[in-house]
Image (cartoon, rainbow, N blue to C red; front, side):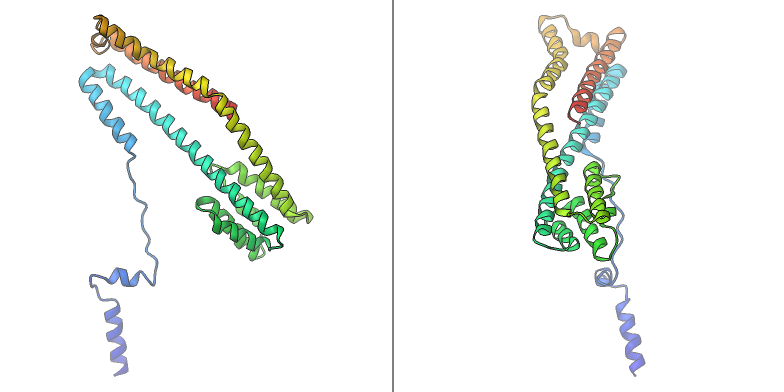
Length: 262
């Protein structure tokens, strides 16, 4: 009888009912494949290029491809810079918590775990990994080797300082405080530099807009530049060349300003 009940219970637990997955998910974590979502920028660029191709022909489509690629590239670069700035802010906050915990006598493993709880995202994962390594007797400095991170340089400095403190028995809180002070100084210098380059970036944007202004004025004067540019032939070639020159100027300006602020 007991064996019969056990077999019946096993059959009920694996029966293919509607909520079987929800029930069994409590025993084994489900493995989900990451969903691939098409960025809205690509969708918008596709429709814009298609519209330009239909309305203006091959030359207009090529010019739209160049312009859309430039805008998408600049947008992704701006998004990456924003993510880097947010990660740096989070890392500075985590370092502040870590230094405060070490200053009151907390073990590095405990201090790293507390810093990981106060942070989020990649910074939290790195601090938690450092705390786990230190708790198990390993090298916490190895947790800061994150080659694919947008703040790899900052993580590398923290790992180097931690490794020096472990090898020579130096005060970890003081070394991390020096690293945090250096990061704050570099961040403030970059912010001042970016503020000083705002005029140059505005000038580049105005210069990129001037051809559109000239085309608009010519259209109002009756010169019909749009008919020439979208009519194919030499006008279409000039449209593609002009769009490529404007895009190259914007990208070159971004490169120059990035070299200054890096």
